[in-house]
Length: 96
Image: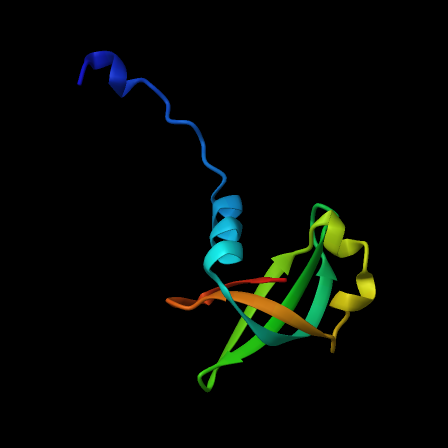
């Protein structure tokens, strides 16, 4: 390891994209319920959802993508949605 390797920058990774790819390829699906939504500080729509696995309730939130925002009724409070989750870390989830 030379002195110049200390100054090299590692390429930045998009951790959210990696997490989404992992959940799409290895995740399982369960039913969830949208409990609330609000406008984010950057103009995006944030939805809060709840799902239950093995008797444990999980709550999470997600900023909707442009594709998801095209169908606002699907993500309205009280709507049932599909939730992808990691079977080894059930708190790691995203909306389908």
